Image (cartoon, rainbow, N blue to C red; front, side):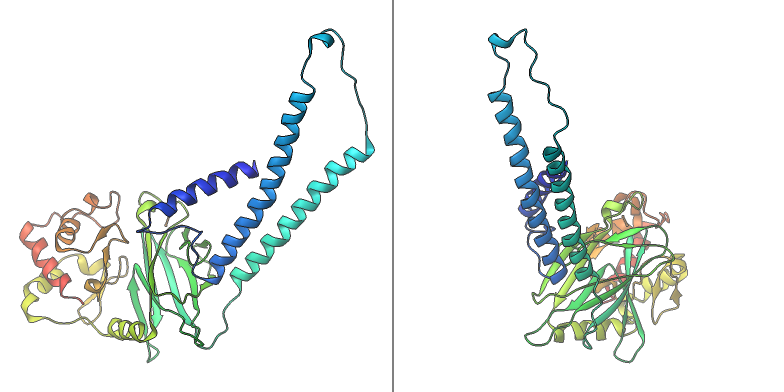
Length: 339
Ligand code: CUA
């Protein structure tokens, strides 16, 4: 059974590897917890592989060597009962194997759960929602900076590690934070705070996926981790900390937004919109994607999303407000200005 699971995992991982654009393979780790997941996989695969070859080999050998021959058609084969050495062997050997597997798994779990104490670490609170991610950072002045769906982190520079420590919570049901190239899965459980960490020295965009079934749009609860040099990260955080820009050329769209029910669910800092049900939109236009990675953030998709959220994410909790095309365009004008 274990070998079968291993084989399936290998096939899935190889298929995952083929889609290089959104790499979700555990075989290209870029962070210590992900390294230990891969190493653990190889070790268990090797142990179970040896067992598989041994058992299957013995079965094949016995089937061929002791197959039924015409000569012994009527004779009953020798019946053997109670061999103490044999029974000892097949009890003790599996026990030892299970014990070794248990030890290596515990070691990896402890490594992955170790809370970084590095003074330079970045602390981010992650809150899972149906079906998007809220991220809370601490700004330079100690204020809380809230954003959504794209987790920006600084990457390690030579001699200057900046591990990322996440506190994971949930606003509704159980979700699971899984960015395979950075770390293993950690659940976000209502009423509970979980911790996980990762650290990478490679600036890149890492892709992930909610890994615990959480409802209709579970598959569209994607994760985007953008690892960038510290200076770029600081500039990003500083921008996120600002209140929303007030562009006079999109005043009409702004007015529509503030007059509609949008304000009941979304926060735009600096405007009188303080809803906390949906993602914070203060710097929406600085993001690459819409609706937790369900679509790229283009004007066309933004309008389609406002017009009918179900056209992009069926079952999404954002209601169709039956707005006119003109209103959708005005809202898109305003949202696109929120850099
Ligand atoms: Cu959130 Cu699945």
